[in-house]
Length: 398
Ligand SMILES: Cc1ncc(COP(=O)(O)O)c(C=O)c1O
Image (cartoon, rainbow, N blue to C red; front, side):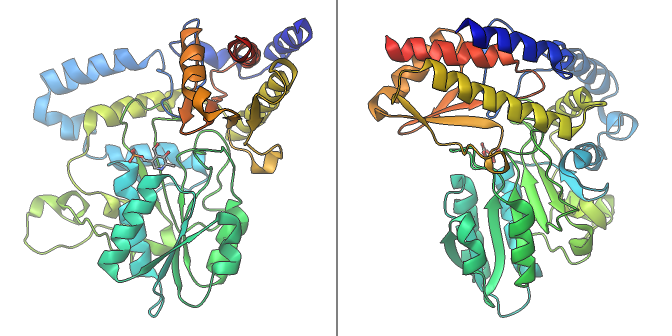
């Protein structure tokens, strides 16, 4: 056991990203739930104090212009862009991921060639994507076809309009092959829409390099934007001129203050906007993105894989044989930034997680039997990984 503690210490001293931990508000807890809600960057409260007292309190309406509120959705989109491999001008921030899934699926089905009436949806998708795709299909006269991501190439055909996929599975932590699946979808003449909630900020995405058509993602997980922070919508530049939003609100109008009855869409990523942006949440997100200054996503990915490898090794060494089974793939090419362990006795999953939290290890669970541990490389250490596995073993032995 002390071997692994020594290894953790050595790994932490060699870790080039270790200093970033000081940028966050952390305590003695081992926080492994950044895949649900990222930790608070230390400087954000002071920035929000300024936003509230000066920009809102003193400047009031003037801040839409003088404090850059009006253009925040595109400006912050451009800050997120390098983290997901997108050139500037293709991402707009606003609304929830759910709302952006709806915009993306409807818009993609409108972009698809005529005669294509099927929307393929990841059969293991986060539920909201499935619900919204179903509603989108009812509105647009398409048919939903649930397909496991690995089976997408075989399911593609002349009727496929759109394929909606999750980059990383929220339950298992499995990373899907975005480059290969996008190429297959586009090769079949359809459009690929990706949900990046569990990959953005944890691993390279390469939206432009891999020719993704549209994408959505949240900012409150690995991007640490805060509870309910606004999501984002990526529309590849080649689709922007024909992008026909199902929610064409006034802030996406070419001349929003012209207040004309007829809708004329703005050019570029602005077209993905709907109504008045949620400024307080949006500016908290903008401030939180400062922690990425000088940090490369490749380095983050390397640490994420090292952390999850090490955690799996500690679990194998400490946890009594047969009590948990990893459902996250061992292969790096198939692993996101979380480790999911199936608790062999499903009835114990909830008490085990409750006890872990009581002992200072915060993960979460997905019913009936999956314990999830998210590894945010910006602030999780190897010592955290070792301690979490050790306490998990103690809980399971008790
Ligand atoms: C993969 C995925 N998609 C969509 C959502 C829904 O996001 P929201 O509730 O912000 O709309 C989540 C939320 O956790 C998610 O994990």
